[in-house]
Length: 474
Length: 98
Image 1 (cartoon, rainbow over the protein chains, first blue to last red):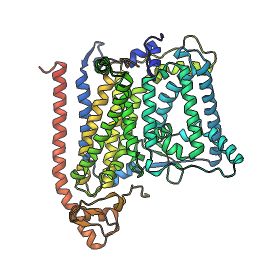
Image 2 (image 1 turned 60 degrees about the horizontal axis):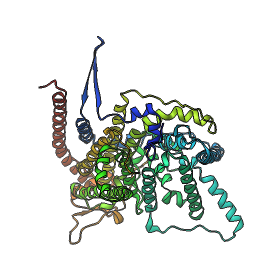
Image 3 (image 1 turned 180 degrees about the horizontal axis):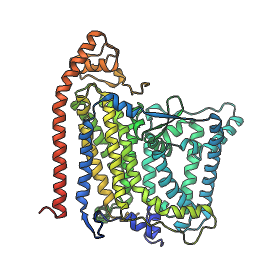
Image 4 (image 1 turned 45 degrees about the vertical axis):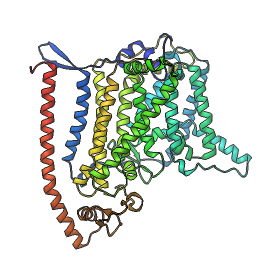
């Protein structure tokens, strides 16, 4: 559990629980087992390139398979299936303030233990709650269950308190307005900045720094939300936007009339194209890219590529920043190019911009699947430590347990990535039938995006199957 | 079943390149199409068609059906070939083929 060479973000914690690390840094081989009742178990290893190729084949094959499903009414039957859940306005009035009070309390403990708690990562409440409990565990619930962030958001309660105080003190207090032409670009910039901070700074191993970052973020969020109202959470706060985006994948949805409904996972994405605001598509692409980037910088290939550049005298931080921005631009460029090609393959007058917005929701299951692949093992491995420390944040046990995950867990990660992509193929298929008349134009419109998705799958699988190597120079 | 279909706003979301003559336009929502075929399908699917429009819609559907059969034949063959190739590839790599 040494502090030697520990790196940014959620990774130091993964390294801290030595047993969990073994599982996370799975070597790039998935084992194919064949057994017999006789007790002899033969096992052969599938090389990494074949795992990656198989991923591409599965995604391409599932596209071919979905082209056989052309009954638009039946597709709508699946996509629009829903069960209304009973909700009580009264319960909501009680539960939401209670949740916000609890989450605000947790925020206070995070800051307190971050500033004054033990500095051993697996004993520190702040580090465990933020990285394991929140960024890995809670985020998972937003796409597997539903987006509860608007109810849980710990900055809502202080915002409300400050707004009330302001309204009482100043009679002419009014909300500021963000320029419309900015759209949601502030959130895109915020997301890239947060991930950059997570990758290059020791915010994942140093509880003091984490507490300072949380405090800074809290001040900025409360100040922004007081000044700009709900538009802040809608267009600027990257955290709220990430959860809102992931929440569209989830089975629990708020319906148009505000009632709570249970849907099939991912089907809510087939109902709304993104709003016509600058930056909406860029945010979804950024979400996809930052998860890839987060994995990419922890591969040996990255280390081998960066070392010669830095030895030439280029500042390491600059390399990390340039690759973050260039990769984002490349992902966005590839997506835009694909959207432009749809105009030809579908033989349509629909603009490339409208096509971009129309199909962007199909990228969200990919991002969710990739997040799950990345964080599920990490969360399960450190969940016992989180539980032990959460019971007594100020006097944590000396040696919290780490869960050892079985060897087949590596295959689960691959299945998460593939599952996300296959769901994305279905969503894109459904959306294309809503946009283009007939069957053939709808099918042909998907060619460019299928090529892009095969490319995304194979690059994600490549990153996932790489052994863990700490990001150098940061 | 209530209608949850996402909607396109033709004025905002479609554009005809300069100098190009629009082959067909939807009489209900003004959406331009590159062919009568696309327009006829769209009117039948998205609007409340007149009898003449319904007839054209059904003719367009019939045309789609033939083309779609050919497309599906190709897709099934492609799926079969990919499946077989993948199995053979695995056998070769895992050393039970050669």
